[in-house]
Amino acid sequence: MISKQAEAVRRHWAAVRQAMTRPEDERPDDESWGDLTAEPRAVDYIEVEAGGLPAMWAVPKRGVQDRVLLCLHGGGFVGGSIYTHRKMFGHLAKATGARALIIEYRLAPAHTHPAQVDDVVDAYRWLIGQGIDPAHIAFTGDSSGGGLSITAQLRARDRGLPLPAAALPFSPWTDMEAAGKSYETNEDKDPFFYRETVRMLAATFLGEDGDPRDPLASPLHADLSGLGPIYIQVGGDEALLDDARMLDEHARKAGVDVRLDVFPGMQHTFQMAAGRAPEADDAVRRMAAWAAPRLGL
Amino acid sequence: MISKQAEAVRRHWAAVRQAMTRPEDERPDDESWGDLTAEPRAVDYIEVEAGGLPAMWAVPKRGVQDRVLLCLHGGGFVGGSIYTHRKMFGHLAKATGARALIIEYRLAPAHTHPAQVDDVVDAYRWLIGQGIDPAHIAFTGDSSGGGLSITAQLRARDRGLPLPAAALPFSPWTDMEAAGKSYETNEDKDPFFYRETVRMLAATFLGEDGDPRDPLASPLHADLSGLGPIYIQVGGDEALLDDARMLDEHARKAGVDVRLDVFPGMQHTFQMAAGRAPEADDAVRRMAAWAAPRLGL
Image 1: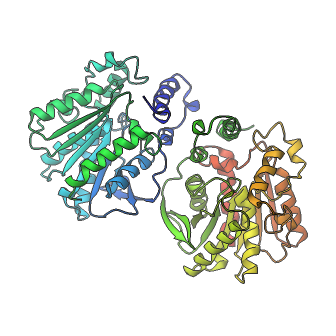
Image 2 (image 1 turned 180 degrees about the vertical axis):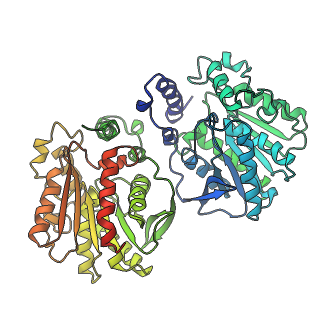
C-alpha cells in the first residue's frame, strides 16, 4: 500500500502535466518540485562556483568533509536547479554522512548536448582540485541527472580523469529513443511521462543534429566496462521503469557490479518526498547504506 | 490591483483554515507556509546554537558580517520555524546587505509566556557576545514575532542589556485581547484570523494564569518610551490591521520614531510571497531601505 505522502508525488506530476495547458504566467514556478521534500534539518547550504558552474554545498552537521556526493539534479535537461533538489540531496548527504555538491549544469534548449556532460566533468575536475580523492567521490542524480551520473563518467575517462568510486542513478533517463515497453505498461499509472513528451525533451536536449544513440547521451549505447559499482533505484509505476532495467542489464553485461531496486507503486523521482513519505526515506536509507562503504565510510 | 502571486497568500490562509477541519495526518505540515517564498539565491544558510536556541544564519553573498537582523518568525507562538521563514528573511537580509540570525524560540503550549521573550533575550545576549554592536542590530519579525520584536526589547532593557538600533515588525500581533475593530471590518477579507481563533491562540500562549494585558505579552500596554525607531508594515485586508495601527499610535504617544505602511489589499504576512509577488518585493525593499541607514550601512 502506498503512503499518503508518496501520493503527493503522483499529484505533483499530474499538476505539471495539467500546467502545460495553462498560460505560462499561471504555471507554478520550477521551484515547486522541491516543495515535495521536507527540510532534512541540521544541514548547511553554501553556494559556490564549481568549475565555472553555479553550485551548492549541502553540508550535514554530522558528516565528514572529505567524502563527497556529486549531485546531478533532474528536470529533463530543461529544468531543475540547485534549489529544487537542495533538500532531497541534503537528506542523502545527511544519511550518508558525507558532503553533497549539487551543481547546475547548463540547460537546453539554450545549451544542447554535450554541454551537460562537459559541465559535470568541469565540476568533477574542480572537486578533485579541492583535494577530494576520486575514490571518495560518488556521482548521483535523478532522471536526466541519473543518466548523466553514468555518461559524465565516460566523458571524464575520455578526458584522462580517474573514475569516481561509484554511481547512484535513480529514476534515470537513459534512453533518448524512449523505446521502453514501460511507456505502454505504465501508461495508466504515470501521469506525466508520455513517450511523445520524452521524445520532445530528447530532441530539445540533443539539438538539431543530435543522435539519440550517442553513447554520451544514452548510456545504453556506451561501453560501460571498467566503471565502478552502480546502484539504480526506480519506481514501479514509472513510464521510465525500462530505462532503469535496460541500464541494469547493459551494465551487467559489461561486467559492472550493478544493483537495481524497483519500488512498487512509486512514481518518477519519488525520493523527492524524502522526510515525508516512508518509501522515499527507505530509498534514501538504502542509497546511503550502499554508498557509505564504497566511499570508505 | 492585487497580483496573482499575492493572491497565493490568501489561498494559503484559506487552506490553513480549511485544514483545521481535517484529520491531523491529512494536514499539510507546517513547512508549507514557506513554500510561498521563492529562493532569494546567493544566500547561504548555516545552522547554529544561539544562546541555547536552535538558530540559522542567513548570509547573503554580498553583505557585511557585522550588521545583523535578529529575526523572529511568526506562527501564533505555536508554529513556524527557522525553516518556514528561511527564504523570507533571506530576502530581507540580501536586500539589506546584512546577515540575518533566525532563531527558534520555544513554542506554546509546551512553553508559555514569558519563555518567548526570555529566549529572544538569550539569543540577543549571545549575539552581542559574538562581538556584534547592539547599535548594529535590528529586531524584526512577523505576526507573533512582530510583537516579540518590541516586547523582547523591554525584557532586554529590564535585564540590563542595551537596546538594539531599531525594530521592523510586520503584520505584528500586538493585542492579546483581540479587541481591534478590523476583526469586523476585514472579516470578509481575511480568511483565517477570526477573533475567536486569535483569542484561543492568546490563551495558549499566555497559559492558565496569563494576563492578556501583560506589557511583555501585549506591547500596547507597555511603556515604549526610549525605544529606538520602529517601522511597521501591515496588509490592508488583515483582521490584525488594527494591531499594527494601535502599535503605531501607542509608540508615537511614547515619543518613539515610528512609521506605519499599510499595503492595500494585502493579507497577513504577505511578505512571505517575496521573490514572487511584486507587493512583497516592494515591502522587502522598503524594509531594507529603512533598516540600512539605521544599522550604519
